[in-house]
Length: 257
Image (cartoon, rainbow, N blue to C red; front, side, top):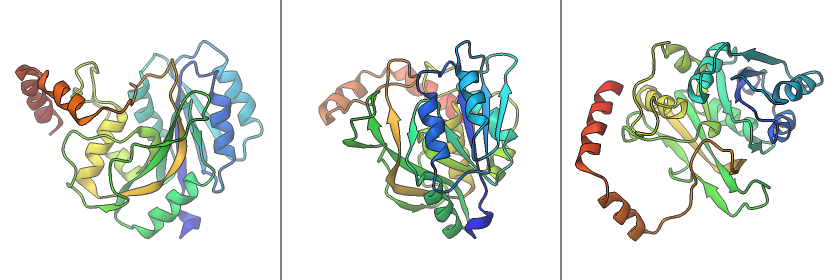
């Protein structure tokens, strides 16, 4: 029943004044509104909180803002926000993208048609900072449809802002420190990697093929670029990986288990 599929939006913010107004407006323009927007601010020193306060004064849904006492980092911030959400499902949301109008409606419809689903994944248009370049669907790495539990390889990830996870799943996550990441530059697993691993173990994963957001890439983004690489370039890159990196991956796999 679409009327009982309650989706909360969990947004992590930090000095996002440049783009957050567009993102907030895209949430208000959803054809299916969330039950709430829960925001965790990680110590913004710009006008981010003022922009949020202005939006919340006329938002078509409740907006709850939590200001972290210390900077948690975006991964831990997202997981803390998820714990505060009241909806049955939680849609992660970055501060600098734009959602297409039917993102939540398509998610809710899919959830109602897939009773044992633990996570819904969507695609986006990969865009420049002006949002005008929409020629490439991203990540577009899994076929649309239902994927049974345990079918994904251990170290896999789908961008957090394109996933909606069940509240039952996030409630199972402990408050213990996250395991080490398999990316050496990250100290701990990020929220999107961790929830992918947990969802893969717990239930069906549903992938929707149509783009549901505009993924803005700009100079302040905290994730890497997604430039295309040829097969030859990828082979050369793989050959440069030292043996001790594979030993490191084995250690991380044990910790995640």
